[in-house]
Structures are given as C-alpha cells and as structure tokens.
Image 1 (cartoon, rainbow, N blue to C red):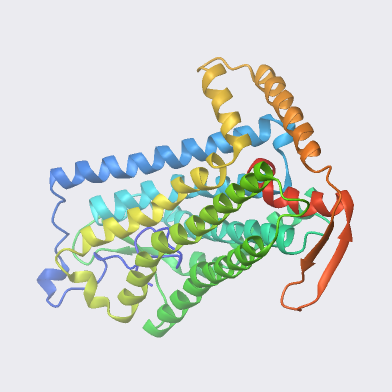
Image 2: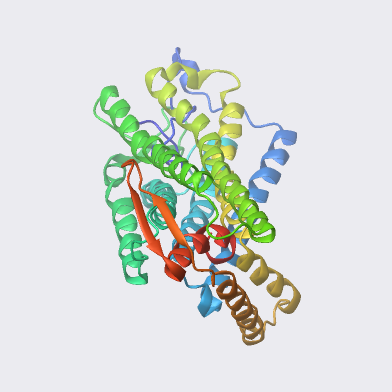
Length: 402
C-alpha cells in the first residue's frame, strides 16, 4: 500500500497523496507545493492541542491508577492500558504523520524509523480498539450476568497481555513490506511506502485491517452496550419504593446510558472518515492527485487522532473517583513538588466513607428476579447478595466502576 509514515489509521498505512505518479513525467517529478503559512499555523495549533490533551490527560489517568492502591481495580487496569495505547498513539502517530504527510510531502527520518514508526502506529491502534472491547465485555458481564464471579486482577492482566499480543502480531506484514522509495527526480528525497506485489494485495490487506481495527470493535461495542442498556432500563428497583433511592438509580442509569452512547458515537465518528478515505484511495488511487486532497486528509486524520484525547474525559472524568483524584492532584500537587502520600490518605478516607454509605444502601433484604439474557427464564435469589450484585452495579456504577 502506498503510504507515508504508515500513518495511524486503523488500516496500518494511509495512501500518500504525494506517492501516486502523476499522468505526465514532469508532474511526477514535482514535489508538492508548500502549505500556505496560515494553514500551517492552523495545523500546528490543532495537532499540538490534540497531542497535549492526549498525552497530558492519559498521563494523569495512569498516575491516578498507579498512585492510589484502591484505584487499581480490574476496570481501571483496562482504562490505564487504554491510556497507555492513546499516549503511544499521540507520540507516534501525530508528529511523524504530521511532518511527513502534511508539511513536507516526503519521509525525512530514515529507513529504520520508516519501518519502526509504520509498524508501531498500527500496533497502537490495535491496542486502543481492543482495549475498548475488553472494557465493554467487562461491563457486559458485570451487568448482564451479575451472579457470575467478578473478573480477577490476574485474569485482567492476562486479557491485557492477549490484547498486546494480537496488536503486535497482526500488523507484522506491514513491517515486512514497508521500505523507503526514492523520489523519481529529487535527490535525497524518499517516501516511506508499503510495497505490495499487486494492487489487489494492497486492497485485501487494507480491507482486512479495516475489519479488524474498525468494524469488528464497533460491532462489539454496539452489541455489548445495547444489551447493557436493555438490561439496565428493564430492571425494576428492588425493595420497597423509596423516592431518594429510586431517583439515585434513575440518575445512575441515565448517566451510564449517556456514557455508553458517547463511547460508540465518538469511536464511530472519529475513525469512519479516515477508514473510508483509505478504502477509496486503494480502489481509486487517482483521488490522491486531487487539488485539495492534502487538506481533506488533514481534517480526517486530525479527527481520528483526536479520539485519543477524548477517552480520558469519557472513561475517567465522568467517574467520581477519578474526578476526586484529579481534583486532589490539582489542589495539592504543583510542579515540581508533589505529596502523593497526602493525596493517598485523603482519597482513601473518602473512599472508606463512600464504602460505608454503599453498605448502608444495600442493607435491604428483598426477593429479586433477574431476567436471564435471551432465555425467557427467571433467576431468583434472596437478600443482601442479590442487592450487592445488581443494585450495587447499577445504582453506584459511576462511583465503583467506570
């Protein structure tokens, strides 16, 4: 596949608009015209903003999870892995693709970096996409099957290891076919391209990666979160009617559904334009010679990269414990001096109080019926255990899980 810097989109590399030969020999020898200064300034501002938000926001997420023992839950371990993937994406995908594809129109970083960056960028997209699936499956199991044992930390680490293994193995063909290709007329000017044997191989590989990195994760997110929404909205509040508790559960349900809709919508909107462009450029390479294709690519590539900056807000800032940790960090921690011990003690005291309140809420003893998924049968259980598994996972979802 013709691509510069193997850019960061779900199909490992993006067709470089500068790499396609023009219809005439003279046109093929021309380097692309320089980007106007005003457009360059806009590109710098937008890409720097996304990079700072992605690296800074996800870095804070990692710090909060690592600094506080009580934050090292199964779900938060997945979220930290997602944050690591997004940091790598912001570090590898944005600067190299921005410089080579959008500013220069050729690859200036050498042959080794050509292979390393192209391969690493595809790996980071796999990590982010499949960690999203792991988070959704964890939620799906907890809500739809509340009586099943919760996922252990060991199992979550194994799943994270599998995610990394898949992310490292799947794009290996990219590393094998990526190489520097000299410009036909300009000396010391190279493109970083995937050199496949035939155009058909390029198209098939792009489609395979598009399915694995975009459509499969998207369908998995839609299925799991839709099923969760059906279960959550269809579940009656256990116990006798109590206005305060019912209002609290209704608010929690609305917040959970809103968050799940946001996850699917943001993933779909951020990555679809870039995937569509990749497929179209493989099927019809002539679109890469269009006059304004560079600026179209700038918009859709920036949109895809911005996905890494949204995740901290979607998964963490909507969670009470992450908000508390961030608030403590900004109030008590001022560079270059931090006092993590003071932050930890304060947060643990608050978490202890929240846990006591949660236990008081779950002291009701009732007879609960949970509708089994798709089977039409009822699963019945009594007392505190049922309320702890069902009511605790719904009413207190934003406090105990993300």
